[in-house]
Length: 199
Length: 185
Image (cartoon, rainbow over all chains, first blue to last red; front, side, top):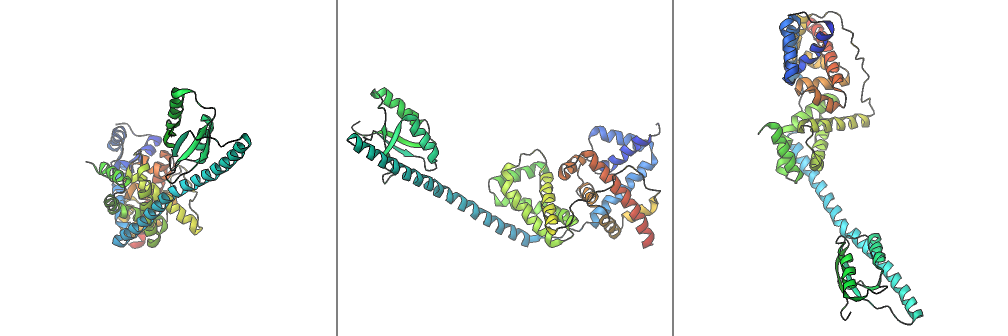
């Protein structure tokens, strides 16, 4: 077997610790084994590395956190879970806040409409009833209502129902159904929508 | 089922908030996290704090574990980051620039070094003298018996750098152990 050149010898030396731990791939292992066969000094080096590994294991201090450590982790996890619960509990509150913003805006619009109606000679007629998803955002609701030409004229009622006026009025049942379909096509915003009775 | 597969399954169960799976993973990794943290911090209380932080992080982010590395590599990587945070908080240096040139040291008494390698006290003292990056690489290569690719992933450096660090650490240890053996004789 030919003697290893300096560069190859260095490369093999760098692989030896990982050969000793059995973590090289098949190709690298074969390369190292060929070199070991040819070079007695590399075999000595491998013996040293093997003893060094045993020495490192013996010399490594492993302080134990033991059962107290596990109890501490459980306590940290309980705190974490409480935080998660609080965070989840806040979500409806935030949705409620968004809803309240919508109510305020709705009331403002309602008052404006009342003023407009009084100028025009009568209140707008509610044509649709709608309930919104609890976590729907005001900005998204507003965009949807504007898209279909809807104005909130009343609500929310005790069960969260808002009443909408549509301008211009859809002509005929087919157009009404199409409009309802557009609203229902946003289930992340709209929970339920129906025409007012008598419409 | 292999150990690696078992550990992946534990992580999957932890992602579903299974505390028993967390306890099993804790029992498996406690000594490894403590040993790794203590090697860098040299402080059992700091190592225990690190253990708690690492396992809490595992609990919180188990669902984001993608399995691209082994669980051990992932956990020891988190451990390393937490140790670095702790070292930074202490205001001390985190990394030490080391000369990783290719120069060979002079001749070393191989027989004395071999004898020194079986003296746990001498090995411990010599490891303490290594620069941080080499000490970390030696721990992962010789105590954790990890592949250089995994060590590179944990230490966030190229694989060649890992091999070079271990090579230089080995030379330094050999030199130190040869002299330690002479002083113990």
